[in-house]
Image (cartoon, rainbow, N blue to C red; front, side):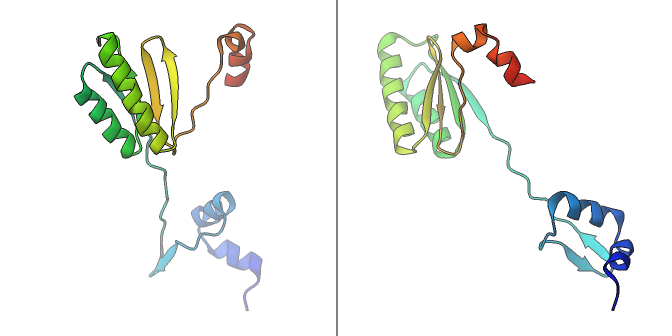
Length: 136
């Protein structure tokens, strides 16, 4: 029987490093002396930026939310009636998806599905230096 130290020395440095960083993986496969490594990465989060002018734009934003993408909606070019209807509609969609809504600016809203965590700071935190401390 081989000693644990000798067994570790017989493995490649990559295998030893990977095991130390990520732990022993059951997904590694040995094939004729070659190690196949599967790295599971999280898919990139997507943010769609939309200038809403019509209810069709609201539908596109809702479809994006349903697929798990954040929607940054700018109402700068929408009239007040359309803006109110679109915000109400998207708030309903976000409620159904158990997501969140944040007002970024007077006419800009961030609609996020449940799989996205949104962190906010208030203006007082920015003036008191909390933002710069958080960045360190």
